[in-house]
Length: 230
Image (tube, rainbow, N blue to C red; front, side):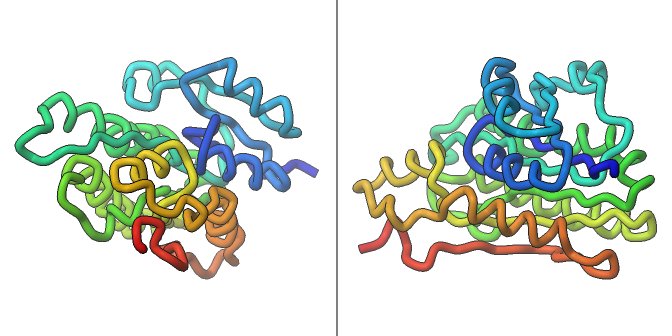
């Protein structure tokens, strides 16, 4: 029996890797990332997986890539962050974050829409709590995540008639390199309170496994206790 296919960006670490490892139990997973050695290391432990070394911010590379002809699930987990006040960040900071977090997502999704429509696929956008509310010093990252949220809302309405489901997942602080940097910018906080990547993968699984007549449009996953609090 042929297994469904999933493509996961940012698949070499953090949330993307956790999602890829979970989906590999039931799907053939295409692992997407920039470092082929890291991709191969992840793929070596996942039956039915394949690798695609690709910078999602490089539109020409995306256009030239050999993308899967049949696709059931697309998970956008690649993301970058730049922190700083509006007065301190540069135009290049804005551009570099939006290229990965917004423009790359939009372009790769556009390329894969025909095959997603064929199978009534699911698009999962790994967003952030920063896509629901913003804080000082976070305009660039939060701005990109608000844009990603709006992109997802629009895509969802456009694709209803084609049977493509679109889900935005908004995690709180997750125990990843990016999450630990957030705590380090404060007083160190409580890293033991951070959400585990596997927990976000479980939320993605709920969205992917939803019956065809329903979709989880927005999933917010918050820590029980604030890792930055007392």
